[in-house]
Image: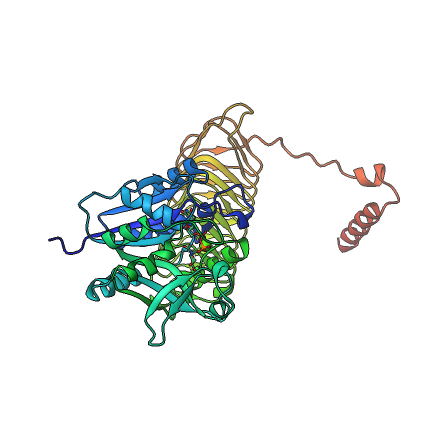
Length: 480
Ligand code: UD1
Ligand code: CA
C-alpha cells in the first residue's frame, strides 16, 4: 500500500460576481501569484496522486492559467447544476474508479491555505478513521458563512448555510472554513443523495456532513486559531486584506531568516522572491516576480525590482529595474530607470537619472549621471561622461554600439549606433561619435571655439549682462 492515497479537488467554477471584474476571480493576484496559483501550490505541497480543478465561468481562461502553472492538473467542467456539492461530485468522476483514499477539497478563492496545515488535517483525519474532517474557526462576525452545528455533547451534527439558517443557528460563531478531507466512497454516496432543495437552489457540499453521519461515518470539525488560512476572497476589499496579510507573513519569514526589513507596512515582497541573510530592505520597496538578492545588499528606499538578480553588497536606491542582473558591489541610483536586458558588472555604477535597456556594462564601468544607454555593450573599467546618449534608434530600426575596456567617453556625447569605441580610447566632451574610434585614440568633432571680444557691449548695451561684463573688465584693468 502506498504511504498515503490522496487526491485534491479545487473548486474554481464560480463567477466571483462581487469582484465586479472582467477577470475571473481566481485569476486576481496577491503576492505576485493568482489566487488559484496559491491554492495549486498548497495542494502540490501535499504530494497528492492527482489534483482535479473544477471550472465553468470563463472556463478557458481559468483552465489555461491552471495548466500553465501546474500542467498535471486534471480539468473538469461543471454542468448546469449549481453548487459546491455538484462540483465535487463531477470531480470525483475524474478520479480512477479504484481510488479509495482521501480527497482534500479546497476553494480557488481561499489563497492563504498552506500545505503544512492541510497535512495536519489529513493526518488527523486518517488517524481518527473519519469519513469527513473540515477546518472551522470561531468568528466574531460570521455573516455569510456556513455554521457548524453541534449537539449538547459537542459532536458535529451538520453544517447550515446562512441563507438557510434559523435565527438561533445564525448566532453560532463557529464557521465552516470550506477546507475539507473526505473518504472518497463515503463522500460519493452522500453526494448522490443530496438535492437542491434549499434557499439558493444549489447542491451544497456542506450537506454531505449530515449525509455521512446518517450513513454511520464519523465527521469532525477542527478549529484553527489562524482564521486567515481560511479567509475567502469575494470582493476587492477582501483581496486587499489577503494581500496585506500574505505580505506580512512573507516579510516575517524573511525577518526570521535574517533579513532586515525596516518598514513592513510599506515594503511589498512577492511570494517567489529570495533574499539572503544580512540584506537590508528600506521603506517603500517592492520586490516582485523571481527577484533574488544576495547577502549584504541594501535595497531602497523607494525601489521597485521586478525579476532582478542582485549581487552581494550591491546598493540600489530610489530606482526601478526589470529583468536586470546586478553583480556584486554595484551602485545604482538614485532615480535610475533600468529596463530589461541590463547587466551591470561587479563594482559598476548606474547613477542618477540614467536609463538603460539591453545594456551589458562590464566590471567597474560607470555611467554616473543623466545618460541613456540602450542596445550597448561596455567593457571593463570604462567611464561614460555625464549626459551621454547612446542613440540606438534610427527611426526605423534599433542598432547596437560597443565601448571597449578602460574607455573615457566625455560628457554629453552622442553615440550614433552602430558604432564602436575601442579599448583605451578617449572622446572629447560634446563629441557626436559617428565613426568607430580606434584603441588609444582621442575622438573629437566639436567646432573650435571662437570668442568675439566686446560682443555684449556692442549688441546688448545697457543690459545687466553688459554692466556685469563692464564691471569685470574695469576691475581687471585697475588690477593691472
Ligand atoms: C462555502 C460553503 C460555506 C463556507 C464557505 C467558506 C457551501 C455550500 N458553502 O460558501 O459553508 O462557510 O464556503 O468560504 O459549500 N464553486 C464551484 N461551483 C459551484 C459553486 C461554487 O466550483 O457551483 C466554487 C467557487 O468558485 C468557490 C468555491 O466553490 O471557489 C466556494 O463557493 P462559494 O460560492 O464562494 O461558496 P460560499 O458561499 O463562500
Ligand atoms: Ca466564497
